[in-house]
Length: 420
Image (cartoon, rainbow, N blue to C red; front, side, top):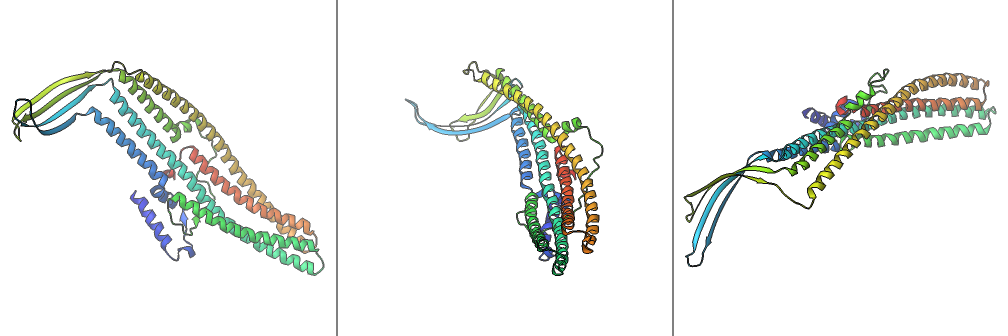
């Protein structure tokens, strides 16, 4: 936790630097992870639930320890025919649970499983936060790169417009071509503005996941590269059994099983050992000693069928938990299979779009030369130019999608913020 605070302090100091927004300083993915671990409110909330579950277990454990009470009293009273008198007393009483049909044991075991469930819930929360944080970080990377691409497109459109103007003024091009070139230029300028606005939105989303309330301009430092090699398909059944989501369902089911046993234990008697020691008398510090020791047993005989109803209800909850576990396992397997398929598709699509980009770059060079020399028409040339622009955007989107799908894969296998 100290390391997380250090990272947060460093990052906040960077943001408070008046020259930060104009510098080339940027935040890395690793820095984002460390800041989120210490500041994300959802993660803090999940950690507090673990603490509460541990306290609940301590409360249940207290039932098997000796219960000791103390009491002191003073009173003045009068009975018929006697004078008014004072009575003072103080005492210490204690009792120890001997047997309760293992009800307390079941409650303590249930509390222990609940702690495990909350710990797995913390991991699930961390995994979801990592997914959202990674999406925001990658989206900021994409927005920054899209600004560069759109600015390059605008420069290219401007050069094309100048070329068309010269040919139009020379009588070698029609007005429709000039108007199309001007429209392309306007579209390019609009897309620059649009991309810059996307940066602000991505920064806002990133700061939300970081858990920082004040947003400042920040740059994402990273590359569109996969974190691992995904050539070989892993054992999905093994991965499903180790995911925090499924482990949480299993822990909840076991906690409910112990709750069911606790309800059954209500049909057994409760046995306690009891003892008390005290003094009583008419003086403020009484001298007459009193003590007692013994055992007690209690067993409710009839409660209108409430205990039977509680057992039946607990059994139904257990059946529900078992069904939820089976359903959860099936859902995890389907999610893993789907996400793995999407990841492989995304990886392949990047290589395909890269080939298209290279091909369109080469075609654009050739066609522009042909258009300048009059060997290609405006319609042929502008189609190739549009293909190049679309390929540049498609390649960036493919890289972005690949990292996003990878983030979903890591979330599907239960990767938390500590995964990195």
